[in-house]
Image (cartoon, rainbow, N blue to C red; front, side, top):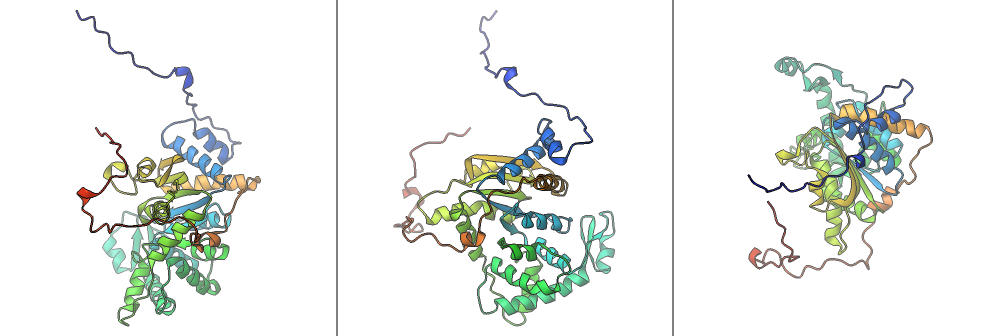
Length: 384
């Protein structure tokens, strides 16, 4: 008989681990109360409560809040919710897909989306000139008219000058202002001075409009997204702190995440990364895509601060956002307003000070063989 004893495994005392608390219904609870109680249950309910608490604490800090907006959120009914976030400065900068902003302009001019069904003959919809976004329809005829309008507008403002997308959307908002039926994301961002970027603008009806009108004229509008990369890096560099909220992932998520890296690339000081990070996503990390990438993975790139407060909620954003933002609105109604609102123009319009240390590149990286490159550290990272 063996006398070998299995190794003693250390574990925390059970008394040191907080217990869960079954959710108790109280008809007098406000949404902040509900979400606070949800932090003591499990799974994505707990994460939803933690996301609310993190956002509520975020607005108590001197931090610049950057929103990444992807997915079909405008078609999904979230346009007015984003407008509320802008008007109450619960966000300071928006990086969006072009599609969300095109659909926003469409609704701003008074055209609705329609309640449809995902169980339908899509060929028949095509014949009727109805486009489908899951269970929601949009009028393709009105879309084509808007394509034509925007294509000619882009020719007018960007034919002979290079514009970043922020400036382009500001000019578009000015043009829309006298014709709008309701306020939208583009017009509200312009009115209150929140910069709006769409670094993948060509991957949307804006790109279709520019090509359809510009190509026959041999004159493609000069929308330069490299300007966006510089301006968002300036925001990261000049902010006291940065925080991020991601609805979905895709280009907006990575574009915001890389803003600090870009600023660090031209300065000698490494920026610490974002201090708060919240994401609502339906993707998973094991596919290797950016939309499901964890904040912990982003820390390996230096995009998220070492001690950042991070919350990921695996949920349909059209479920989570109305709950969390309404809870924040109820807090605001009770006087819990934001303590610090950055002047965004002072952030993106600056350049690094002339006396700031800058990186000096003394070796042409293309002429240096990889085998001859000196590592930055002698530390060896072991992997299993």
